[in-house]
Amino acid sequence: MSLLSELPRRPFTQAEAGALGLSRSAFYRLIKSGVLRAVVRGVVVHADLPDDHVSRAAAVALAIPAHHVAVDRTAAAVHGVQTFTYAERDAPPPVEACALRGRNPTHLDGVDGRSRDLTAEDVMTIGSLRVTTPLRTACDLGCVLRRREAYAAMVGLARGHGLTPVQFTRLLPRFAGRRGVIQLRELIPLIDTRLESARECWTLLAIHDAGLPHPEPQHWIVIDGVPTYRQDFAYVGARVCVEYDGFDAHDATDDQREYDAARRAWLRENGWTVIVVRIGDFTGDALDRWLDELRAALRPTYSNRRW
Image (cartoon, rainbow, N blue to C red; front, side, top):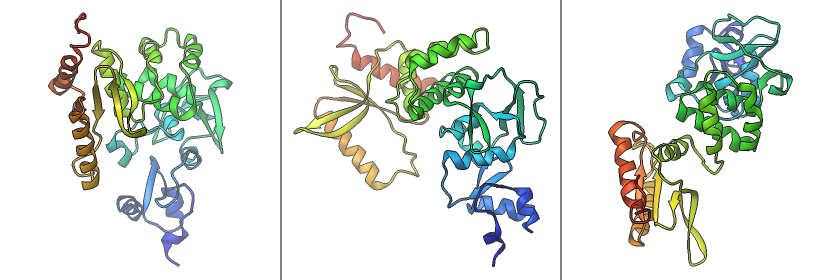
């Protein structure tokens, strides 16, 4: 029997693997080769096992001490919303955890220990892990992340867990005086669970911040009574759509490229202005370019206003 087959079929630590005879260098080679998947720093799972909230919770529980609560980006990951950069997914950052009331923050290596005023209603248990609820996690991230990442996290958690702006607003008074609460308060009314990705959230937020009218997300074009083409964002009356092109040049298949090209050609031939936003279009001149294009496309319809 190989040593690999003796490794636990659940989340486990490098120390557990070492006790079974797997060297530290071999442990990290298995991660690099894709045999093992790093869940949080120091905790892995076999790559062929499901990546679900139960597995993530079990992994995080191995990384933090008892009587602590997983919070912020770690909690979001447990709840199915990734807020880490691509680089951080390859090398997970420290687990974010808070001590429960009356206990000191942890100083364990690989854990970003902190204190926070959590109540019983803010915390839930998944397996053996205490973690902030999706609502509390979303509000915390609305305060601590940069604005567009915060908005994407809030929408993702709202969509995944059926949260409404009303629930956010009810919790808001508890954040009075906290750093970041102004940002949180501004983002709550913008939550729209029709948005399906972080970059769609970034796109809508950029449109909002530019003072432009809000489009309709996930609009279907119906041809001969059949919903045929879906647009990320549509101004139906103006026949203008904005689409986030999430395909990396190396990731998109020929079929995907051909389908998108055919769909956009049909839209343009049928009187639609199609504005495409790509991965690098959220800062500087690239951001200004497509926002200016959108302003120009909307101007005939909104000629009595200045954008």
